[in-house]
Image 1 (tube, one colour):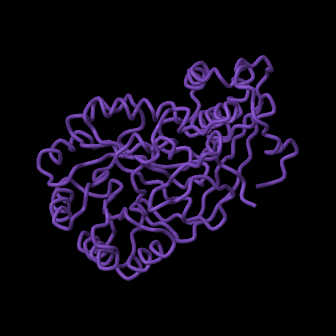
Image 2: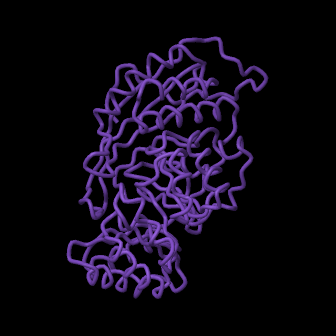
Length: 376
């Protein structure tokens, strides 16, 4: 994880005094440390192939308690992306903002971060760390602070990237050896055309357990005509929903799919935060919430309830997040319909451990805060 000169110890977390929750020990301190992780299996989407990622580990400290978060770069199109450099610049600005506040002042902090134009991934890391700090300060896991029921967490889908039918079959088998796989997300949108997509999906179906949940994500690779053709074919294959068939910016054309597709249509790249939801309610059936896109757990919570109020379904997703980021999102999982938090399971050098995979579901532990620790 690097040798930061001001690196703090994660030990010494004695049980806090629950009756004293107002901090007067300012300023709050923020530490940022970039680190790189590598994928066990390369992941190919319609936008490219990914083998590694460099993220920023964020730690806030006050009263001798550390709260942890992470920021993961991402790209949804050529003109819409957040680089590591963008994130690090934003976090440097955030240091000054946090020095003026207590960790309890999340609403005020969020407002200042937004006014400063800090990238959503950087805001997500800070918000994540503030929630982790709060849970540790209270001596309670975040899901319990929120009063949520872990038994309601849906199984997480396990992603199979674009590949040949044989490679896709082998990837499905590898997932089943690693986990009690109950749900699979198949990435389609091959450069070789729709027939290649169909052959790949059929190959996966030949080896996964009968009755498994199957979803498809095209990452904006198809036209309206291709989307209709594939959605109708996929419905006959038992697929549950189709995610982001059209590229970001083509939201007006989703109305045709909403009316004519035999599959529910979800969007990911077309929906960043709660402000995007009202314009989508008459053309999609669900949204994919990612902490890096929306700006953190606080905004994700708002998105969930906004979407539900409009009758939309909700899923939680990830980018190349570690167990830190995916565990944070998993604390919200009792509130959603679908979960896609599997990126950390495909890492060979994840520095963190957190939520546990139990019967195909990613379950946060009873440890306080996010419940994330450094691996031994």
